[in-house]
Image (cartoon, rainbow, N blue to C red):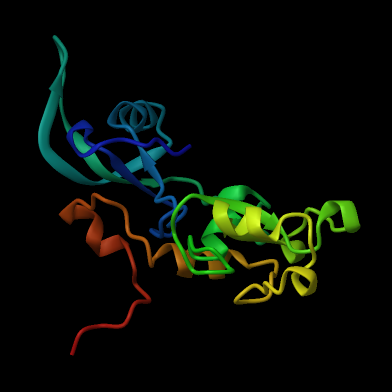
Length: 185
C-alpha cells in the first residue's frame, strides 16, 4: 500500500520487519491515518514520531513518522512488467536521445513485425523519437537504443530508484534509507 502524500499531510515511512523499506521507488509510504489504523490493529510498531499529535475525546497520540511491520514480507524477486518499471529500468530517459521529457515506450521490434511486449523488446522513448522510429526496426530507422533492453532484478530497480529521491524526506527517515550508498569522506 503506497500513498502519495504531500509534506503537509504527515507521510509515514513503512519498514519491513527487518527495518528496510518495503520499496525505495516509489518509497514505501502510508498516510498517517493508515499508519494509526495499523497500530491499533497491532500490525506495526512505531519506530519514530513527528512532533504533531492527534486527539480524540479519550486519547492523544503522536503521529508516527516511521513504522515497521511486525511480520516480515518477503520481497518479490521478479519485478512486475509495468510502464513505470520500464521507465525506472531506463532511468526515466529516452533510450534513443536521452531526453527525460514526454516519455512513452517503444517496441524495439514493432509488434507488426513480430515483436513482443516484453522486457527484452520494450524501452522508454520520448514521443518525438517514438514517432520518428514509427513502425520500423532499429536498422530501418537507423535508431538504436543506448542500452540493450533487459529484464531487471528488484535490486537493479531499487538502485535506479535511489537516483531519483522523493521530493520530501523527513529527518526521522534518514536512519532507515540508503544504507548501501557510499559515505562522504
